[in-house]
Length: 413
Ligand SMILES: Cc1cc2nc3c(=O)[nH]c(=O)nc-3n(C[C@H](O)[C@H](O)[C@H](O)COP(=O)(O)OP(=O)(O)OC[C@H]3O[C@@H](n4cnc5c(N)ncnc54)[C@H](O)[C@@H]3O)c2cc1C
Image 1: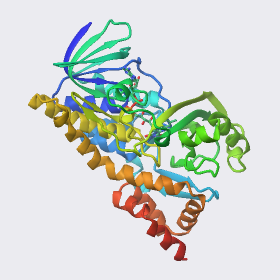
Image 2: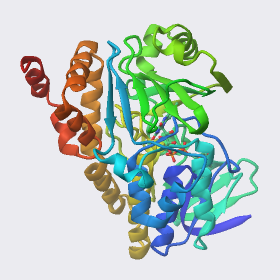
Image 3: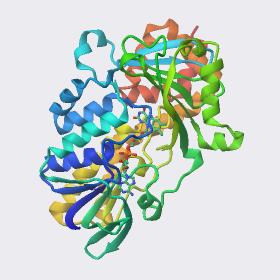
Image 4: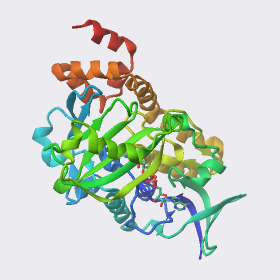
């Protein structure tokens, strides 16, 4: 089968799906090609932050309203941080969340469900041609665009421009974009599903346990409906290599022997195995565009280095990629120069946040500082409010990334 299109999106994860929905909204036809057949799983913590709701609202507020009705997701209203000294500090996403429980903006949803939900939105758009089981293996630049073909050489797509959204192992990002895996800017993550985990937060707070032997990574428990949970562990790849840590072994060790956590897992049963995947971090600025293409999501290494959140950033980048692609179609200009605007948009929207998270992630590797912050936060409503605001306001993150802030904490008894 041979297709001609102005825009082809490679990959239909949250980044690619968002780009397609935004293009459709702008009245531009596109092809989305994914190697998988949906519903398909993706190894993830399954946490969806307020960013996901915010970007879907920009496209069509009805989408998030529909998602709020889905039975398989868990509403989540905050984060429970646990410092290395095991001091727990609950930080709600919004101060008056108790009054707005009907309008949750944070969720935990298995990716097999969430990604399929987005695919269902795509299928409703006439302007989107969605091709499953389309494993793109070659991309060749021609004078008129890119020619793509699949493994079996049964599919050929001629596209004037590409939005590359095929995740952390993107061959295009490596071969054409020059982005290679850098262990200093990369996390290895594993996750498992458990039934009957005790003590899950009644308002679906996700739990980040900054255990001493895992810093600057963390152990997480993200609650799902009916007492099940996504349980996982993420650590910097450079540390893993240096210290020869076996993540799966460490996860089981924590569950079975940690003095606080082991009680919560007595009687809990694993559903399926423990699976792992890489998280390319946005702690290093990369070039995300070139002649006739832009990179988005994990293919662009845009994961938040502090929280490991990548879904929201993939969707934001998909949104801005669609906007620049629509402009490129309008001006019939797909040059590298023209597409540079995309990088400017990403720098403007995500740049400061990624920088701040990079600084905070470095601070988080010092257990004493983390303990100090959490001890103070446990006692001070003002500081907890500040941490809540960190999720919504970039200026607050700036404050938290400033060493002076911690000096004041130390000397302000
Ligand atoms: C263990 C772990 C835990 C995580 N936890 C969280 C979390 O709780 N919250 C959060 O926000 N983020 C989390 N992340 C990060 C998040 O999973 C990613 O940032 C997010 O999936 C990126 O979306 P994407 O659309 O860029 O790529 P993906 O979701 O990876 O989608 C890429 C798509 O491209 C397709 N594809 C790949 N190659 C090809 C090809 N050659 N041809 C055609 N199609 C192709 C794939 O089938 C896939 O559908 C976690 C990641 C890991 C590994």
